[in-house]
View (tube, rainbow, N blue to C red):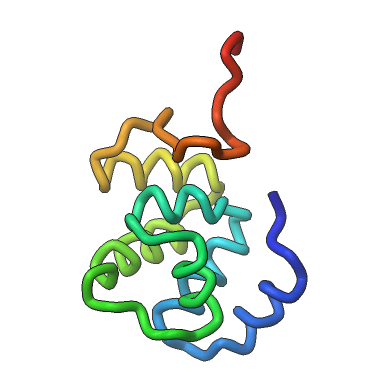
Length: 107
């Protein structure tokens, strides 16, 4: 799912703090916000606030920093997801409940 224009624009002008850096990396790969939430433990609303330049609290700073590095180094969203799942010890099929990315029962 593509990020909306207002999110992309806000991230471009969000400065060089951790949140906008994470946002730019996620947008570059079209890496879903729901996966960022799963990996960091933060809510989607919190992550969007980071993208807009709000402070990433110490509780999430380490995870957000690691994920930003992974996203910046990965060539594709799929590669980033695979690498992040390894780094965060999460099964690659693990997604948040009720996600639009949830596998269908017969897939």
